[in-house]
Image 1 (cartoon, rainbow, N blue to C red):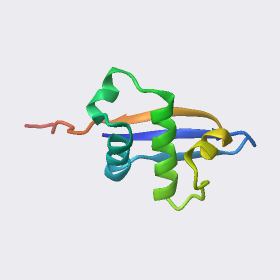
Image 2 (tube, helix red, strand yellow):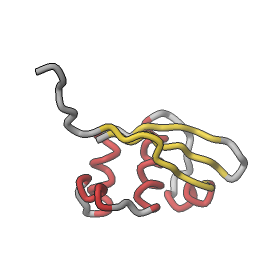
Image 3 (cartoon, helix red, strand yellow):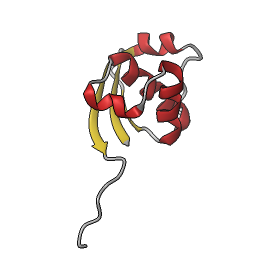
Length: 91
């Protein structure tokens, strides 16, 4: 599963980031949930954490403390979801 997230910061700037396997595993480890659980609803804290880890993976400077990152955000929106196992077409 890959999510594309649109971030809006308090200063009006925006950023778009995508999750990867590392960010999804980091979410599972921190919150003791399965990625598949996100299909049933996702908490804003989970989205913010995925955004935080995705920023770090893309060399976007973020505060060391996760809560300080959240304080800088106005919103986090999911703009695209790619399935974990897309089915092949033309078979």
